[in-house]
Structure formats: structure tokens, C-alpha cells
Length: 134
Image (cartoon, rainbow, N blue to C red; front, side, top):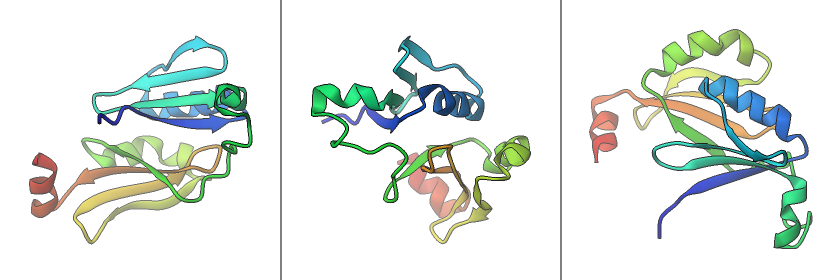
């Protein structure tokens, strides 16, 4: 099995896509107005409108802006530099400034416009760097 993507369901594809385009500083592919995606080396972040749930059984399958159990995590080269670039922009959504976690990563935690938790992290301690090389 090969993990390929996470799809966020939203009532406002344009707003959420603009947020992630600004965060990653690159455009998403938008094959249709109700869907956008950014393909990265490890996986794809997809954004789908609630209407895209119809083939799966309708809107009762997933609820937009209701996530309270998952964190989207993205490894970055230097989380402190990313925070400096985005600090003003993230001000109202910031959960935690860059902090060294007990497992050795420096972690920046904030919420996207739909309330999803996003963690940008950089392996920081020798143990974390060693584990990330595996």
C-alpha cells in the first residue's frame, strides 16, 4: 500500500486553496473549480468542495470545517525561518510558536481557515535528525 494524499473537504475551496498556496508559496493545480491539489515528494494535499462527496454517498460522509482529531504535518528545512516569514500572517491562527518538542522536532502549530491543525516542523536534536534519516 502506498499513501498518496490527504483531502480536506471544505465549503470554500477558493479560500482554503489561497491559504495553502500562500503557506507553501506555490500554486495548486486546479483541474475543476471544486478541486485543487498540491503534489509534493511524499504525498498530495488535496482540497475538495463538499459537492465532491456525492460519489461517496453525499455530505453525510464528511463534514467541512469539523476536524478535531487530525494534524496536517509538513517537514520544512527551517521552521524558525518559515515562522519569521509568516508570523504576521499567522497571528490570528497561531496555536504555538516554534517550540522544541520532547521527541526533538522544532514545531510550529496553527489552524487553517477551516480550523484544521497544521504543524510545520524541522528535526532539531541529534536523535530527531538521526530518526529522520531512516
